Amino acid sequence: MNNKKLMEKVIELDTQTLHTREQSERVMVQIAIIRKAFGVKNYETDSKVLDFEREQILSDQEIEKEFKRYIGFWEWAIETNNPDKAKYFENRVYYFIDGVRFFDEKLAENFTKSFMNNLNAA
Image (tube, rainbow, N blue to C red; front, side):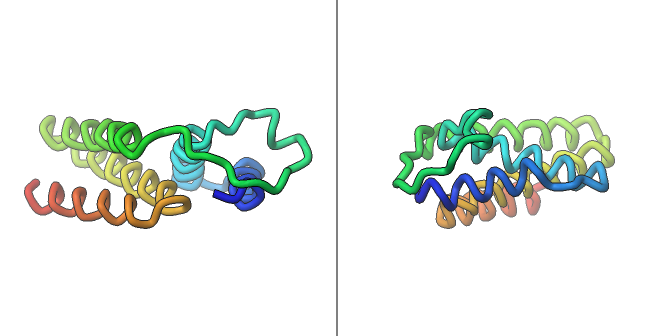
């Protein structure tokens, strides 16, 4: 992925004015997976952004493991019959997918299909 494009997204998320808790959750989940997938460090947002192709350091399998962690929290909330927590974790799954969509549309679509199957089964 182009480092400039990546860093523009990271800086945009980092510097957003957060007006609601939901917006804060969305930004935190998205920036976490984007930073983790490409190994973006905090100091990089204060440095000059260089133009080069940045390698993804997490494999698709590692990203899927993170996705399954979010699914696990949602499933736990469903099992404990806690609809408020279930909705909270459902939103976090969507935020995660949106973060992945920024750098891998196909993987995000696979996650969306997988989650839709889980929703239909619940």
